[in-house]
Image (cartoon, rainbow, N blue to C red; front, side, top):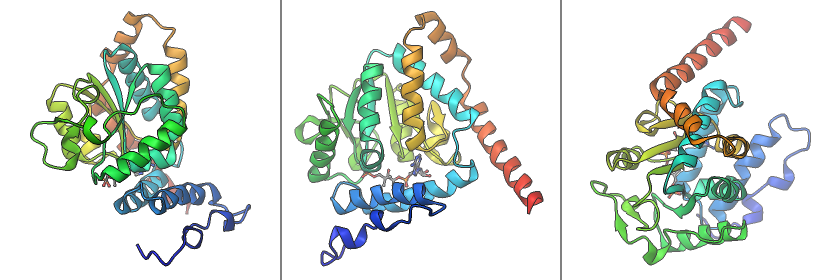
Amino acid sequence: MDKSHSSNEWSIRSLIPENHPRRESLIIREKVVEGLLEGYVAPQGLIAHGRGECFDYLIGEKTQDFAIKAMEAGIASMLLAKHPVISVNGNMAALVPNEIVKLAEVTNSKIEVNLFYRTVERERKIAEILKRAGAKEVLGVEEDASATIPELFSERRRVSPRGIYIADVVLLGLEDGDRTEALVKMGKKVIAIDLNPLSRTAMTASITIVDNIIRAFPKMIEIAEKMREKKREELEEIVKQYDNKKILAEALNFIAKRLTQLSFDL
Ligand code: PTJ
């Protein structure tokens, strides 16, 4: 990144016209850019975000039924879990820091920073953002990431022995397929939020929420607040009935039908 550009020159949030038809989407994009300029979003996070925007178009930029069903199964799993953990990367910290903290509170989950492009500086910055958002404890920073996920060679293999290492349920967003696979192989239930229903993460996770983290987190908080009143047996039934392959098929079918309809409407 050219250091001669101040963050104001790159970040144009204040210049986006009030009546711009895609104002909301542009503001969200700016948050990721600001995270990059502040040094906690990885440059590759911008590419990932653009990919997400494309898939969000395909699902109509709305939370669809297949995502709600996956969220319900995901929240039920988190509420039933012994050691639920929310895994946080740069993009998540830029887009939903307050919601991560709130969802962790409602589901009694731990919060852990876990980065693909790991640097101690980014870890510290993300932990600081989460603490500012109200997190009492953030795992996975510096020496706390002392345990290792077997069969994984990226920096993402380092995890907290009090967090992801012992977790039975892990919620993650914008994840790398290899790590999702490694976590599933370790016997963990992985709940992934990923706009691309064809990604390796989406295909490998135990529960895939095909939705934007921007919409998914607030909705999951709402669901968790209602669901925590339910009996254990009811939650177990929701998890038992859930079929991830069916949900992914619903997402793909939805996109296919929507595109066909749009082609007729031209
Ligand atoms: O902060 P780090 O170092 O851990 O790195 C994070 C990134 C995102 C750079 C890293 O995990 C990465 O390279 O991810 P991928 O392999 O590009 O995968 C990102 C996936 O998330 C893609 O399938 C995107 O479609 C999807 N995605 C992007 N934005 C969103 C999203 N899914 C949900 N909500 C979004 N806002």
